[in-house]
Image (tube, rainbow over all chains, first blue to last red; front, top):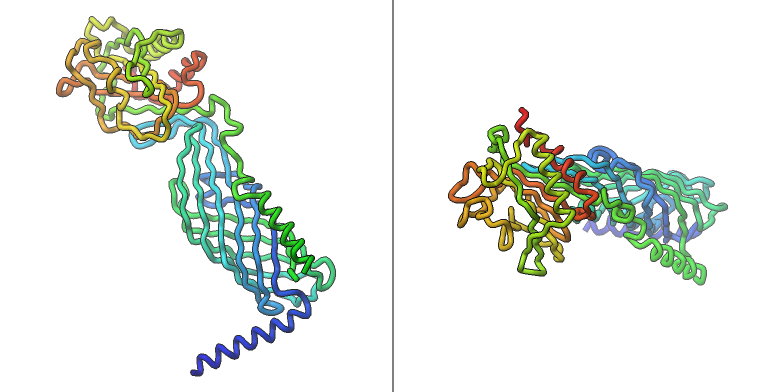
Length: 206
Length: 213
């Protein structure tokens, strides 16, 4: 009984907080970012090049001035072509130009916290995304592809800033740095690690 | 509300424009013919390549196709170039070319494969079926070919060229054992200008295939 009472109190708190935040910005927001990702660890050994082909988008709902929950997705493409080399394969040897690619599509639930009030000129924040990612591994041996597609758990902490275009403006510049980790194992890759820079726009929807 | 709809509309349009795979880099787009080719070599780990002295090579090339049951033997300019190039590579590795009537230690079969299907996995030496070299050619009528299971299974499509090196000295149960094989796949493997490069690459990645050690 006491537990239920506590839940009601928390819920009431949330509703009240939302009423307050409603005075600053509408609680629902959408963000869209361009992203650059640097592979780390074994992912770097597989495909060394920084990926300039990525984006992400998400919805966020402000529970109050500081706390938000949301959902996001995105895309990142890793690619590296290696000059011709001979790869031992069991008892055989294969001479090939390898084009090593990996496409990642995460779908994550997020929880975020703003470090300053909604009226600030710059709003630094932190958030954590937890969810799944589709890993599409395509390694080309010459023109012949070796493919593997799977889903993995993925966790992504992020810190960033929102810069409103004017006080309480519903439109803000978004810039952030995110770390991605997934216990993904396939061939050369023993785990998925990347650091990702995002820049884009965040709209509060009326 | 109108503004929201406008925003959502813009966002939807942007997302549609950047469809999930739309911004991925396509590895095949900027690939040259040379980069598209792969050379797969296999060998019998138990074979002692130093124990062979002489070799002989077929006088033409078998052309296999899954569109046509009747495999044929051919001797195009490409085939002549292939025979000459493999001969030269073997001699460079210290083996002596002899006539097939002189009981060579090693026999070399050459095969071109022209298949129109894709994504069919194959068994080791699958091409040694009907139309492949008759063991009678090597003085073994009624014999057969035996492929140890060291052959890695790849998928087959389009044109390929195979070089098969058999031990003629020690047949196993009336069958010649394949001791080395090279398979070429990709764009331009049937192009005469690429023959030397492909033969040299196949031998270069098989340093054990020599008498000079």
